[in-house]
Length: 339
Image (cartoon, rainbow, N blue to C red; front, top):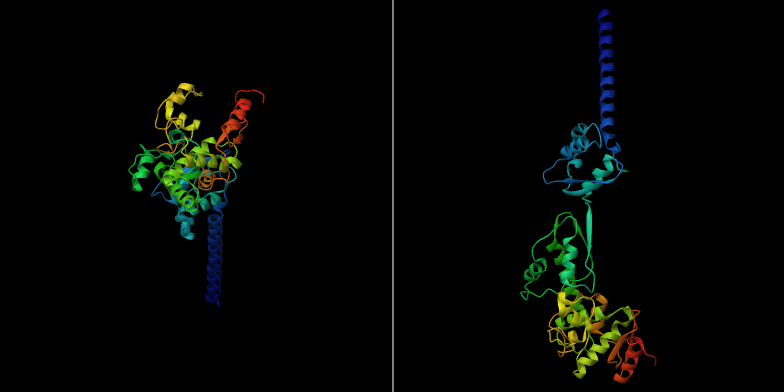
């Protein structure tokens, strides 16, 4: 009987120990699984870089060293319970005041890195774009990136103007500017080819590149989107009749750094490769980056017989069929004379 009682006591003791042990393990597991719910301690957004080879354990330890959380030792054991936490992705990530460790790690697991953007504005030149690119944060710059892209696509002309599509491009931290510009180049070639294939039978340019040149001039001359086909028609009609284009933006482009905001009579008489008051036909290259709308207008000019236009000084233009009517419009809107 005594032996029975001793056995029962021992069995009861073992059972109680197992219950306590099981309870302790359960508490420990619950503590680990609840760890990602810990709120990060920050009052404004901050960024962290996950370098190649960094483990999630090192990442969480780094966050603790920065004072953003506590008990980083738990992540080592939590990963054993949830191995998927080890699959973090490299890159630059942002942490927000509303973040918990779990919400931050979820973005890291999904690779939702910080993105930056750069807008290559239509109507601007390569030189102007380069200045904008030079000021971009976390963009890896290189020498002559536009020419690098051209060469990569088999273009050894050394003439990048107009061959890149104006758009807003998104990039990751330390991404190469060449990668960004490569996307721009491919988009422009696609848009240009589509415009060329869909061109009107009456278009007077002889190649897709000439269409690009014409579109760049239309872009610079247009203040209102609705007028692009009309301005295109004027230039197309002039090309058809062998008239000079006589467009100021080409003069300005040919002047380069000498342009200070005004064009003089002397500037109009200067023989440069881009001065369409002196040369016949198109200038040798585009003078800016044309938009999609400018490409389409160049390919499909309006069915009108205008040969002239003059600015009303409000972004719109007066279009004329004859020189007499044009001079009257110039007197009214440019020389401030009464009709």
